[in-house]
Image 1 (cartoon, rainbow, N blue to C red):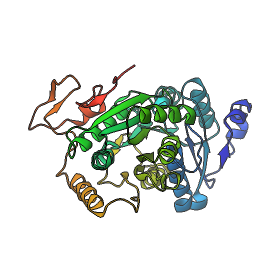
Image 2: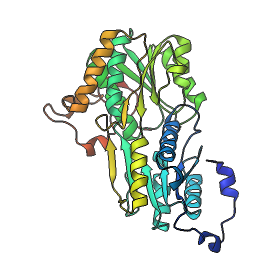
Image 3: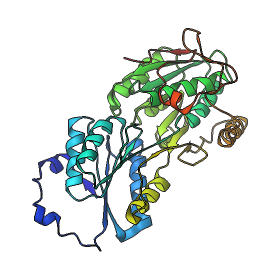
Image 4: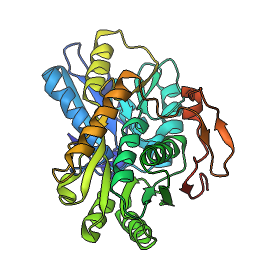
Length: 358
């Protein structure tokens, strides 16, 4: 079920008497809030696949809905509050900028359960969840390091938050593991979803010598730009091969299906508790999408093997020694970054060109 955000905000509050008519046999209402249009690829599309999986798994026992294209900020709070008022018992808010609005609404509706993707604020009825996106991102760095002839990787990124900075650093570490001279150039768009800005950033990076492009943004614009320019690329959030059949190598792909099904079942059973889940490749929450058939077989084998090493814990992405852009040691040899350090990452590793902040 699709809900138009503008219509949602315009509908008057339901009378308390109407809200009290729900019977025990009524479907369990679950809502999802998306920052961008669902479309057929990208961040919101992957969450939408998770919502559809809930419907498929639980059938008539649940009634799910979503609101798409909700800006972070005041609009988000109004939408989330309205969903709580409308009788949804579990609400998933799926963008980092929804964190504070979700927290405020959760405090106002203690009997409603809330889950926020990629955030860090929790409460008795507010849980958080995310994926270790940096793990498959490291593998795309290996691919970029092998394929780039200039050694310059162009990275279109939304906001300088730890999640994004960690992904950039992971890709750089993967690239330098096979090409010690590889560099990453970063352009910030200050938006999760703006195809025009993303395309302009990709054009700028290609003009600066990048012959491998990637993104931490939600549209397919970067992949389409790479395809038109004939340079290699990797997508983000979901498989984007159909938008770059000649140049899209693979993508960092999110899988929320199992998580959403499990959490809805727990909520329905009364066993739901607040907490934090940060799943990686081992848990199947993040992975690489299918490889482009044009990739050399030895490269596919190399990346596949390193992926298995990550799952088994034999390859730790943020393992020392690690230096920052200025050459200062941030993580000494023999030590790996803790989860807390990764979640607070605000610096770039050696070889990344750009500012890790605004």
